[in-house]
Image (cartoon, rainbow, N blue to C red):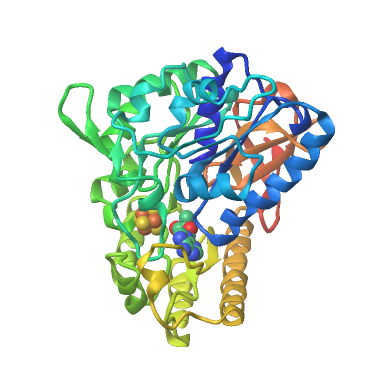
Length: 431
Ligand code: 5AD
Ligand code: SF4
């Protein structure tokens, strides 16, 4: 989502004659687009600001420094107080006001610099205000935000406080943006949302559309592939599961965070489903689309997590057999209910559990990749690879694929045979 927001900021700034530069020392404006989801991510901005300060001092430019994203939203004035070099702080809901914000921090020579914090929740949705046509930096695989914010209030998560309430963009806006992206060369659309499968909105015919209906309509456009991230198990409808069978362009990949395999922990997390509910979704989706690659997110060391709870997490991983998954140590976030719970888990216990879980997931990814050896797959070639006449692409299952080939093939879907599987990629030979 931050990647998407960064692209949009670049598009807003282009008419004001701001263009990307190759290194921060050459920039007139540096925007740090930040993430607040875990403590480590949030802390990064201060070390990054320190690095920029050094570069900037040596370049003698009067570079404006902005902190955007969810750390901006959550910390606001605190950033201005802690980091005197920062001129501007704003959040994910106000970046469409960048031109006005830049105007108001313009400082005349010799006068003290003007600084601004803009984190109020605006009356007007930013998507209604963003008028620049989408170019997505000419990506073969383009991000398209269709839903933002979250009302689920998982007890560990800051997103509902930083990204705001859940909104679904109307279908006409989404279709228009999709067409612009396709015209600029997109072959794949990645539909984005904190709870993307909770999308429901006004359709082109004024009736209310479901998320699968939106995917179906998008699949009528001249696009090759469609994906969506990230989904919540509570919003996995039968219609959506079936779409993986019925809509050919919808790729066989499902990122469905489970977070924990323990029913007790899931309840404390306020996730709204059990181990059995989650398994039912996976089994049903695989009935419709047996080859679907399943991915997920996990948190280990949630407050009060016992050894038995953790064993349940390992058990769900064993049952699902993930193609890929992300896992994190629980990180206490200010203002969330879980941060106020008792029985926080020792750091070394969290680390030990994370290692065990990651080893298991790694093995599953390896097995998944190995099962493709010798098979022919479709690859969307999206960029040059490392080295001359090397290409990089993605399988339908979102595996990274490397192969020999000419740069003129970028943007095409080609058939290729898997000659070798690695832990995190496939080596292929064009058929
Ligand atoms: N601590 C650790 N991981 C978290 N996530 C969200 N909040 C926290 C937290 N406080 C993880 C969840 C989520 C992913 C985007 O980040 O697994 O799905
Ligand atoms: Fe955070 Fe996702 Fe839970 Fe929303 S559903 S509160 S974004 S973890």
